[in-house]
Length: 239
Image (cartoon, rainbow, N blue to C red; front, side, top):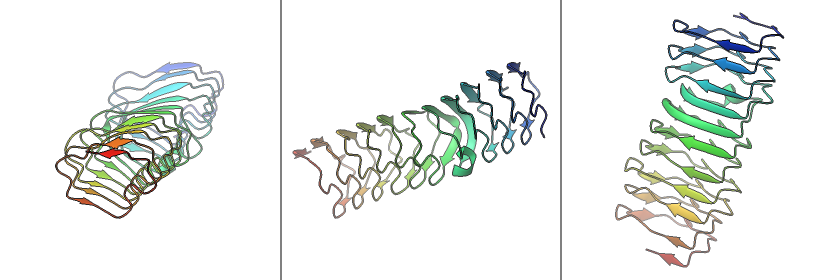
């Protein structure tokens, strides 16, 4: 723990093979740290590991990382691009006090918990194949403009992308996702293009409440569309 705590003159650090864990507050207060390269063998990152690294602009979390501590990026005010190649199960405590502009979620992330990125002004999120679960309200109120969800996705929580007011396009791929839950895109007032997953069987209440797609193509797999699924939409055609 606190290995480099408060080392204000540290600007650049690259780790070689062998490092498996970064302790709590390891780089806390390293205000001049601009470049940090983490090795593929890394498995764990402790609480507040990068707290207050105000000069850090981008960071890649390696694929093998299984656990991320709480508030590890709190106060990283210049960190606008985060590549989460790994991380295992993500939750809201990890990202308290932090909001990147660009977010890449890689194959080493299996699940995104409830409200993990809720209200954060993320503009771009890119998913690689690997994520199977996105929890309720995980991206609620974000500034995302377009999202392409991975074929590995099996479960989407209610309100996952609710009130993403800048979202214009949502594309699903694969056949694993069977249910589009309540309010998953409700309040996405600019959502005009939706490509539904080929295996979806059920579209729940208010899934697309107040969205503006003119046309929706329903896959042959759809068995049930619940009351108000497209309430107050501007649909002109459903195929």
